[in-house]
Amino acid sequence: MMKQTSISPLAWALMALLALIWGGSFPSNRLALAEVGVLTTVAFRVALGALLMWGVVALRGITRPRGLRVWAGFLGMGLLNNALPFTLIVWGQTRIDSGLAAILNAATAVLGVAVAAAVFRDERLGLRKGAGVLLGFTGVAVAIGIGALARFDPGSLGQLAVLGAALSYAFAGALGRVTTRGMAPELAAAGMLTAAALVMVPAALLVEGPPPLHLAPATWGALAYLAVFATAGAYVLYYRVMQLAGAGNLSLVTLLVAPVAIVIGAVMFHEALPLRAYLGFALLAAGLIVIDGRALRYWRPAQKSRDPAAGQG
Image (cartoon, rainbow, N blue to C red; front, top):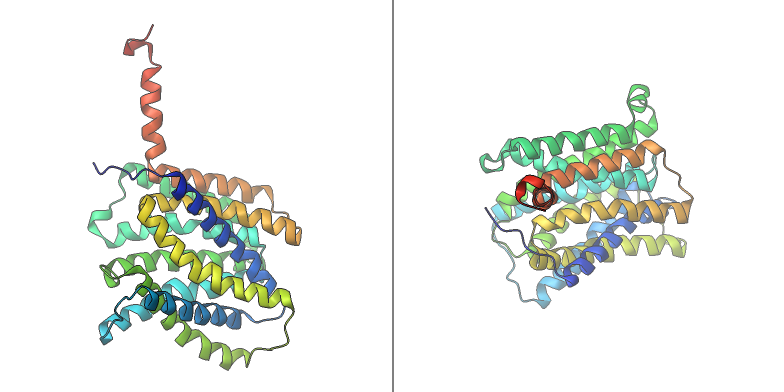
C-alpha cells in the first residue's frame, strides 16, 4: 500500500493560504460583475494570468513546447480547466450567492474521482470510494434542494452552472493526466491559460464589446485579484504545496475554500445561506473524507485499542 505523504507545518500554512486565495475569488467575481460582463471578467483573468505564468516560465528557464500535439492538449485543457468552468461559475454567480457557489464547486473533488473511475482502469471506485462519491452527491442534492430543481428558476440554473463547472474541472483532471504528463507544471499552466485567452478574449469582444476603462477602484481590484492572485499566484502556490504534501493531500484544500468564501460573502455582501446549504456541505465534506480514507484508518486502530477483547485492563 502506498504511504501517504505527511503534511508539514509549512505545507499546512501554504494550503490555508491557497484556500484563502481561492475562497476570495468568489466574492471577487461578484465585485467585478457590478461593472463588467461575464465573458470580459473571465477574459481578463485568463489573459493576464497567462502573461504572468509565461514570466514564471522564463524566470525558471523552462523550455517552451513545440508541436501541434502539445498545443492541441493545451487547447483542450484551456477549455476544460479555465475557459468553460470560469465562465460557468461567473455566470452562475449572477444568480446565486458566492458562498453557495463555493459549496457547489467543492463537488469537483467528488466528480473527479467518479470521472477517473469511468475513464481509467487503475482508478476503480471500490466500496469505500463508491460510498464517498454517493455521500458527496447526496450533499450536492441537499445543498441545491429538491424544490429548487423542481421549480427550475434562475437560481436553479445558477446552481447547475456551477455544478457544470465542477464537472468540467473533473474532465480536465482526466485529460491532464494524458496531455501534460511529464511536463513542467508551470509550463502546463501557462499553455492552458494562453489557449483559454485565445478563446475568451475574442468571445468577450464579440459579445460584450470593448471593456470600459473607467471602472471603480473596487472593480479593478477584483479583476487584478482574479488574475494575479487567484490564477497565476494560485497555480504557483498549488504546485509548491503538491511538492511538499503530495497530490492526495491537496484535496483537503477543497474543504477549506467553501468556508472562506462563505465568511467573506457574509461580511462583504451580507449573504445568508439557507440551512440546507450548510448541511449539504457537511455531507459533501464527509464524502471527501471517506474517499480520502485516512481518517477511517486512524479511527479503526483507536477503536481496536479501546476494545476490552484486545487485552486492555
